[in-house]
Amino acid sequence: MRYPTVEKRAKAFNGVSYVTVPEDSVFLKALLFELKLTDPDKNFVEYRDSCSRINKTSVYALPTGGGDLWPVLAFQKSGLIYVCLPLVEQSLKPRPPLISISGISQAFAVLSGLLVFINSSQKNEAEMSAKVGQLPSLLMQACPLGTPLDTNLNGLLDNIHVSTNHTQKQPVWRISTYKGKPQVNVCITEKVKSMQYDKRDVADMWQVYGTVTCKCDLEGATSNVTVSLNLPANGSPLQDILVHPCVTSLDSAILTSCSVDVMDDSAFSGPYKLPFTPPSDLFNLCYYTSQVPVPPILGFYQLKEEELQLKLTVNLKLHESVKNAFEYCEARIPFFNRGPVTHLEYKVSYGQLDVSREKSLLVWVIGQKFPKSLEISLTGTVTFGSMSKEQPVDPICSGSTAYVKLYFRIPDYTLTGCYADQHSVQVFSSGKPKISTYVQESPGQSVYLGVSTEAEEFIV
Image (cartoon, rainbow, N blue to C red; front, side, top):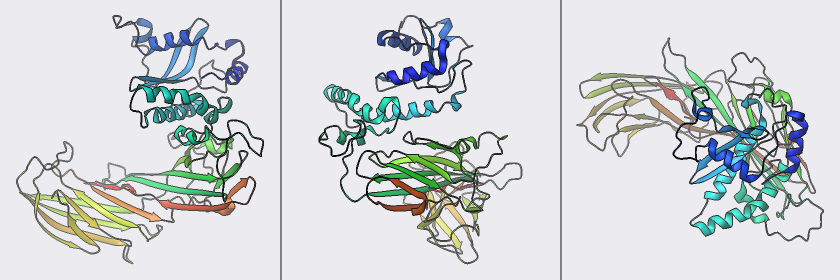
């Protein structure tokens, strides 16, 4: 599908250096050559396959009569090629780094939506042809004038055959089918991944990953919503913010903070305003990361091997700044490259310990709260039988190399302090909507404890 409006904007950005998009047949021939899908007898082509030109991404430059067409995103899946040429809102000479081009992530999102749509409940060629026939109507709604607003094509299917007798004037790509009480739901979910080694020469690692999910049930096609994410005075700034294509504008300060660049000392603490035109279905408004000062649960894990026995010690401490109210909390202690657990002697200061049905995993059920001391411990001796084919094998976790993995969920709480209340959501539409906001620490915080800890925490 071509968008003349996008081609016109690209020409305005590049002037005389603009490379015209060729006819479909010429474009396809150049693409197949670049993907090595032509000339099967020609295994090596100097221009394409030399060591001086190693492509590590799915972004290609296609040689055409008027120059190289770049950046072309393309990948293969189930016998089909998914391809998109995104708009780069700056000059292409010199070529800007891919990470600075917002159109790249938008194009990947659109292609991913196409992939999901084409492969959902598709049984034969007839169904495939029917789905392909629906694409023009769906893309008109998902990408009006070439600007991605929604990538969930399956969610747009219900809007294709809507009656055109609307009482309100609206563009064809903004068909609204919702009738009922207006409401907006916003949910902030955070997941922390942490690895703790308890070694001087190995640094512990942890980071928070957040997702803001929205569902807007609003009548009319001209509705616009603004969600503001806020932090308390001592909150941890949000970084690496990626937004849904429906977001219409962003403050440049939101995009500058990056966790990858160690030289980046920018710290924008909000509010993070995200204005958008809402899709009809549930969608992820944005993703972010954050570096909180400490992991939520600190841990220590020690193993001592004596013949067919293992003596283990696990100490856990909930940080005093973390809300002590869990939906659930448990620690899993797996054993690899050993026989089944035949005997277990243990002592726990809190909670209860169970052996899995497979006899290769200990599950320490901590429950919904830590004690007032915020510290708990487990000591025990585990005896193993002879190794069998049913027992788990791992090439790395051999000998005293092992880990404990924590799983927990904390409702109505985020580690960063990020929140969105009813006053943080503005809705520009007819009627006064009901606004609901939620926050939660997601399941599977991973803490790997060190021999090694989810939320996720690994304690190694």
